[in-house]
Length: 164
Image (tube, rainbow, N blue to C red):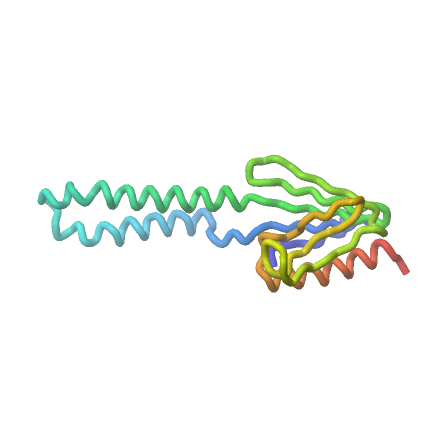
């Protein structure tokens, strides 16, 4: 699961969540170059003919469309959610792909984690409730990862809000 729990101090724990980004910069270049190389193979037979010049713009447009789609997907997945838990306060900060930020906070004792198996935008939708608001967390994760997130969040909140 793309997340990391960080003990920043004896009383503070941070959870960093982000979407899967399976394509590295090297992988991106490989996909584009591989597509271009495979798309040009059939052109070897028609080099020097009128058909070559008729098909070349479409092949270049397809390569450009693939480049644009992969870049756009990478930009749209630049999301970071940081949940900071202390014995007194739970604070969630979400950084969206456009750079805007959304935040929510509540007393840790009153913070509740809920999982909605059905009825949410995705199956096993995880929310934090408190201070009169309900906010989503980890909606970009897979169904199994959201189940794991729910159990980990429940455990961490119990530990922070109700220390032994």
